[in-house]
Image (cartoon, rainbow, N blue to C red; front, side, top):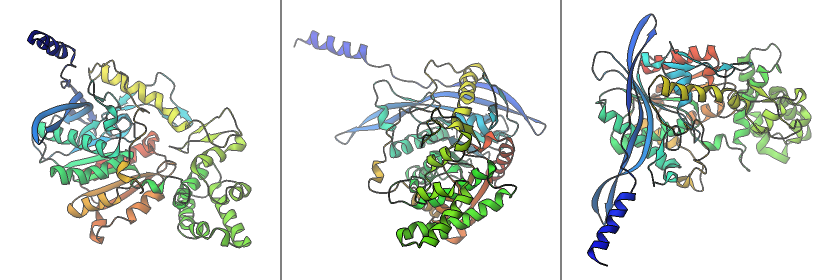
Length: 492
């Protein structure tokens, strides 16, 4: 090949190569009134480029761009310094953006979605969130790759980020970059996660400490799941049947199956049954006498609101989607998985599994409308990509690190707490949460391998609502106060 031809080929490659990605952050200034006092703040939103160190034959070749991660940061315009906390927040899925925590409970603006039985109608609306955590902590909301506006770089492999380990590494890198670029290494730092985001937060705490020496002050675990084995109904695993039963009882209570008995009385009875006689009966199987089995059937049916015939036919084992489909079958209604207070309809009232979760479809439109309007109209960020509130593109999610074992970060959280005895844990549970039940969270917390004195660092709060307990206004008000107290360092 002639030299001129080689030069032409090289020029063609350079001309067709993707443009080098750059950060596209936009800052705007706002204020909100909290407890009668005006709080000015700066909002910065946009995508930052994540780069990875690359090596060839042991030689450093530079930082290769891998992804553009979307975030929204709120920093209060107060006296400069490092003493103000900063909270890094994300939701779960996997495949969820941070819109739920952002516009549901933590941020300075919130969606007006309505609640079970009184949903808002399109086109919905936004309002100031006078209970925002920004009054006590700066906030950084992070959308993992393929959610929100976050994407792999042009020509990059999005699937590289669709898995447990790479997800942890990429979110940790966002946190490290933001902390360094904003001179916040000496600020108290908190990680707030919801649902799968709680598993991510626990693993992040251990990773940040070991990889970067960045020690968080606390974790805010909202609708917690740290061990997938506690919520997955798989053959031979009877554990979820017992751990979900108190939630079934709470949902049955909400729908009038327990008369005028107080909720806490019903839940306490269900927890007692679910921690003793019920799991023992499941373990005994065919060794149960006819009388023993009949007694377990009767008690299970009474607590769950299901018929004795159904419990018997289900072999005492009530799988959660079947429960949500069966509880109000006589009314031809289903109840929500994320929040059992919500009800819906199915095209086939005789079906075994519902086809739609009414607690998600009931509020998803309000949150999608809210974030799409808010980012452009109020934060001045313009991007023609679709904002992925909930994305199926991350599936199948890789758990290759757990091949042959349950997906669990119990030991990682335990190790983080042992290494950092100042690490505090706040766990928020919704009684009608049929996705991450409160009794499963309690079960996992009891199995943390930490010394007794570190258990004083853990607090658990309960709300009479579901997975996104903040859609229930009394729960939102109480939860906001609980989170503020925790981040402010108050001990229960």
